[in-house]
Image 1 (cartoon, rainbow, N blue to C red):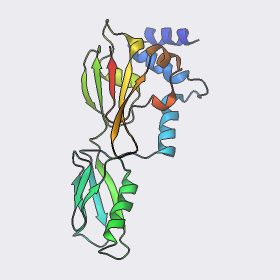
Image 2 (cartoon, helix red, strand yellow; image 1 turned 180 degrees about the horizontal axis):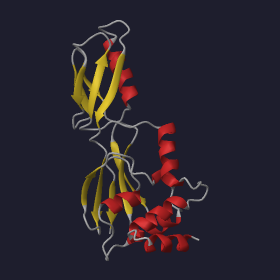
Image 3 (cartoon, one colour; image 1 turned 90 degrees about the vertical axis):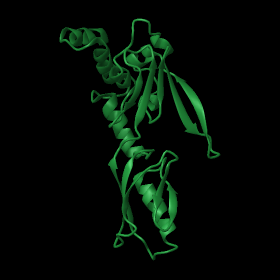
Length: 212
């Protein structure tokens, strides 16, 4: 069945890598024909919110207080600067969680502050694609992206790529306020056959895809 679908897509003029990517989104066991992307994005929206990161542009509004309201940029160290309360950690939080944190800090100076945080520009969702791809480099993304889609953005594999040795390098918190590096093996055949762990199919900000 899968081979017939790939052949049909190739005859339609769709590039080979993209054709395989499309098929990989349709045949995951347990998924309906809405495909992996729809399922993954639904999972994202239901279980997590967009996590803020460096260079994101935020609008912080403190109700009935223009002096405390402002547009801020998340610094490389993950902090934002606010009047009165000073620096506040923003990276790693959702906009709602950041609003709660700012409101909690403002309670020392203002009774029952109401704070909202909205994301004006997303600049922190970046991925690095290195090794045997046509256009290795850093790519800034504006929407959730899968591993196969990121490789396609980077121009696809070169003829020398060891596709089944593909790795994702990811930095995660170690529970002590620090970070540690993990390497996730992502064989291309598993991605195509829908056998890869769905939890890791969606790129996270700062991920590095390594194609030996």
